[in-house]
Length: 66
Image 1 (cartoon, rainbow, N blue to C red):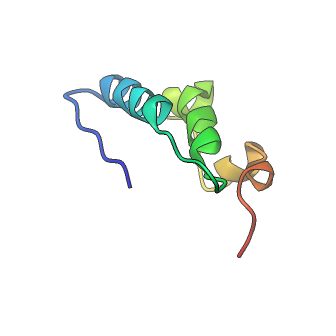
Image 2 (image 1 turned 90 degrees about the vertical axis):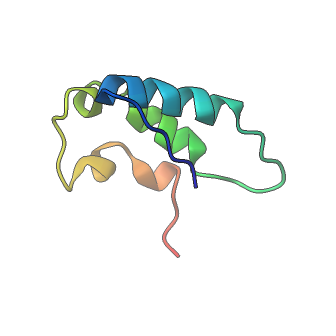
């Protein structure tokens, strides 16, 4: 789990991207690439997303149902 804090949303997003870029996890697949894709998406950055957002991001390419 990664938690970041900042005074403004855009700052928190930048902090989260930096934190995810620094993660080094070997041997298993993670959802980090998906989270980075979301954090860089224009709709997410503008706050224009809903419950169908993950489907529109092709989340199944990154996350497999359990």
